[in-house]
Amino acid sequence: MSLDTLISAAQLQALMASGQPLLLLDCGFDLADTAAGERACAAGHLPGAVYAHLDRDLAGPRNGRNGRHPLPAREALAASAGRWGLRPGLPVVAYDDQGGPYAARAWWLLRWLGHAEVAVLDGGKAAWRAAGGAFETTTAAPAAAPPYPAGAAAMPAIEAGALLARLGQVRLFDARAGERYRGEVEPLDPVAGHIPGATLRFFKDNLEADGRFKPATRLREEFTALGGLDATVVHQCGSGVTACHNLLAMAHAGLQPGLLYPGSWSEWCSDPARPVERG
Image (cartoon, rainbow, N blue to C red; front, side, top):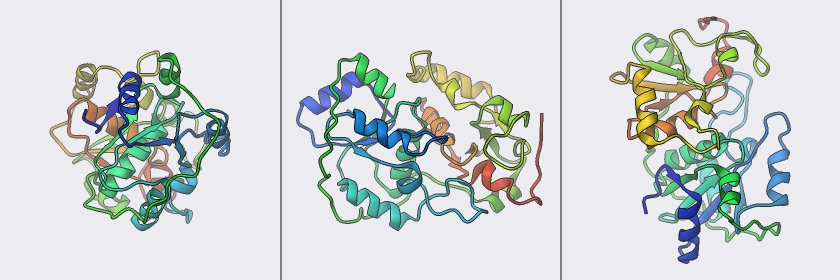
């Protein structure tokens, strides 16, 4: 079984029943209540899962100019991965209960760290529950390992200056909700609008009504219909989290997913010299 994009609940159950060593990452999170995901994990998680906190584990320190969820230093991420018990070759399955954006962030980061064997549980905790999967409330300390030996980054990123210089030459996808993209509302960042030339691709449009990803063929058709896939594709959102959902969807669809702009809108709009579009 290839663990590189998505894994179904049934496939995960079979993998666990086989005795295959595995690292499960519970990535549930709530931007409005940053302790909610940890509480939900404590109340019930997949057997043996380790909790990964968006702010503490899947992001680095903020300085007011690098966005709300900047990338962690690779050394810091390697140390976190070691605390989770990750070692080279160990398969990882990340999940959440919010449609997959936080699990997708973990997927992107681990591939960026050089770990190839990582997938997202399609449908998250709801799919696991629907498949009759067990939950547990006890949390054993993970078998900590040394810091993960970082390898070549399989997932490339682009910085703000490089993106500014290439506006109009890349296909830029914005994963935020439409009203935020258009600048009608902005609940999280000080400026409303979007990066000039960006195309709206709300991350939830990757999902079926039950929270599972759409079939790969349908995702391929939808992303292709947005146009410009012969150019370099750059993904962004509010803070570089839900953009990873679009990267995962494109990879699952068999398309070259492109680059992540980690700082995303929260970094872009922190500099008044950078251009802004609305509508």
